[in-house]
Image (cartoon, rainbow, N blue to C red; front, side, top):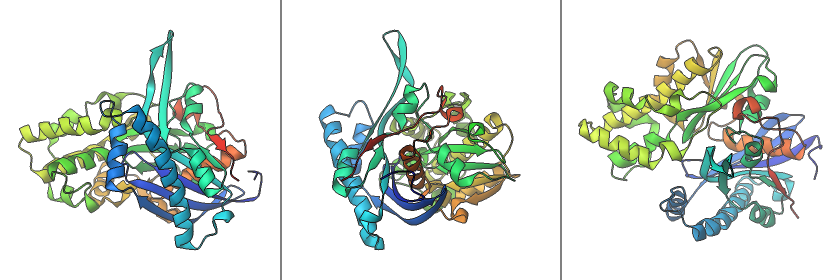
Length: 387
């Protein structure tokens, strides 16, 4: 199989910081034009999700479980591809390539000192050799490390795909993903790839989900449609304190994750909320406003100009309260969704990894140094041949 084929069918796999399950998108790519063929989400069983989340915390992660879950997730990723094929009547052997992000359990973009040097590091699990063996399809995975080896932060990874999918000759766009973490790709009108700017703006759904779990004592795991936030009132005093987080002032390139906005942050925030006597709806409204404000503030601080359009993707696009808050914060920006471009809002990142894998197999550099801080463009990923 070669990436130089004019027509190539690729399955993209994604499991994000929310650890909800495996997103699978199957796309056809012809001359850099991408068409979504099928998409679905395959949720993790609660016990597996709990085990994965335990690996994301140094005090609960064990090397034997990391080893085991790496292969367990490889099986889960492979089965998700095959299930989608069966569900949609797609022949598995019609897929030429799989691109798998894996499941990040630790990401250290600032690095640590070793041998007198700063070494950046990252770890994704979901063994690609298992995926390739079970499906028989050549698999590209583990995209972050090469960018980090080139001096980058290994994130954000999707700007190259956003450049392929959403750049426009006449309008500037900010492709805003709101998953567990929120990240933006800024595409100036008629831009070249080296003019793309991208970075994590801060938390997306992660803190909202964490506070919902705390406020409902685990009965709910997310705020469906933003209903809880809609009933609450934003506590401006607490919001101002939250907005002092040092990550928000850090200049791009920058990326973040559970290390800064995970369980420990939600627990700290829960304690603050209880001391202030906030009702559950007020707590959720405040953290929803936090996500909206950090996105808008990041645009004001770090984008060279306000975009003409925001293109929303990710689970946060379903949160009507969050979207209303974004419209209030960014009144001059037209807010659209990836649905308008033929890509389900939940599929954008899985589609992105299909595009990244396609570029890898073509030998095309698919990091964006202006986004990650890498010293040079490099080809990302490790290739495991299929049968």
